[in-house]
Image (cartoon, rainbow, N blue to C red; front, side, top):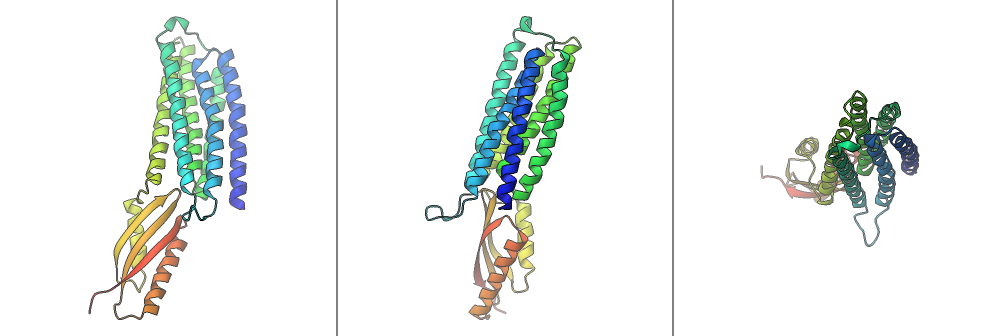
Length: 290
C-alpha cells in the first residue's frame, strides 16, 4: 500500500512539474528568440511521457504471479526503462538535428533576450530538485524505471546548463553558440539514453549480478556454521529482482532433517540480508569424507 502511494505521488509531482516547466521554457524560448531554450523545452515535455511510462511500468511489474506468469511481472519494469531510453534517444537526435540546421544557416541566427537565460537558471534548479526527489524514492522502491525517470530529470538539468552557457555566449556576441548549445544538449541526452537502455537490456537478458555482489553473497553464506563449502553459485537479474541458484556442501554423515534445516536457514538468511532477492534455490551436496 505504501509503495502504491509513493508511486502515485512521484508520478503526480513529475508530470505536473514537467508540464509547467516545459510550458515556461517554450514560452521563454519563442519570445526570447532562443533555439536552445526551445530544444530544452522539448526535452522537458518528453519527461512527461517518461514519467507516465515509469508509473505504468512499476504498477504492472508489481502485479503478483499468476498461472501464465509464475515468475511474476518484474521484467515489465525493465521494458519500461528500455522504452524510456529510446524516448530519450529520439529526443536527443531531434534536438541535434534542429541544432545542425541552424548551425548551417547562420543568416537565420538571432541574439536571444534575457528571458531564456532566466528560464535556464530556473530549469537547472527545478530539475535537479526533481532528480533528487525521484532518485530518493527510486532507491527506496529499488525501481529501475524510476531511476531512469530520475536520470531523465538530471539530463534535463544538464541540458539547461548547456542552454545557459550557449545563450549567455550568444548574448555576448557569439550567436552561433545557441545552436552549438543544442548539439551539446543532444550529446548529454544520448549518453544518458545509452546508459539507461544498456541497463534495461542487461536485466531483460537475465544478466548475472556483479562479481562484487556475488563475492559478498558467497562470503555471507560461508559464514553459516553448517556450510562446508559452496559448490555452485548462479545469480540472475529479473527486472529489479534477483534469483539465486546455490549448491552447498554439508557434513555427509548428517541426517536429512538436519541438512534440510541448514538449507532452509541459508535460504531465509539470504532473503533477509538481501531485500532485492526474490527467490533462492538451495541444493545440498554431501561434503568430503573425513
